[in-house]
Length: 265
Image 1: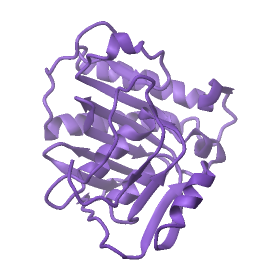
Image 2: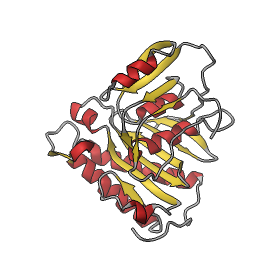
Image 3: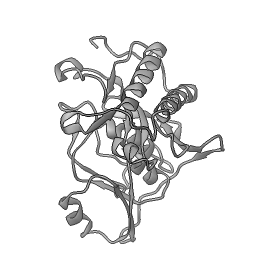
Image 4: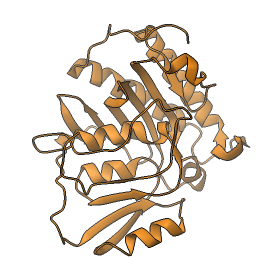
């Protein structure tokens, strides 16, 4: 992990397609464990980990490293280098091999495989695969954001900030609730509250299925990076605004609100 991140793989449609393929194959691996009583252990405060998490991690790391071994990889299922080691990284992969493990164990389909490329603290390429739902979201800087269901046509995603005073459809976590969220939502003209697991919340925002995503309890950067990329690049003519920045000291995000700011970033 001491190597300096390179730029040997520029962002392109073919590079994005390659990462989509890796994420889908990882999703196929995850599905071989779906609905089975696979071994589960706790990762301290980070929640449960299953055999599916580990198998997906191994495939993704192997494939990304074989494709371009100049780029470091931060994965939820690997030891994270100390901040002193990675603080000067300007380009690296951020991976969550199985986001929404609780949803995976509940067999409700709302879990994803997340792969993002981070440059200078921002996600510039991101793929979110929901293998049980048969849907893939993907985006890259300069290319836009997209959705594909199964082998169907690829759909360009386009989202716009809500108008002032507009009734808001809020998407929120199915598994994480906190009093701060209730207090915050009481200040908004909420017309609907939609619940879904994993990084699908970012994707619902990107496809215009929801107007606001408020998360006021902590999460890790790998939970957000790929979905945040899809959301950021879903703007009509410029990027949607996101306050999130990656490769922080602890890799922890304390909370955020997405969807209300009309300013691109």
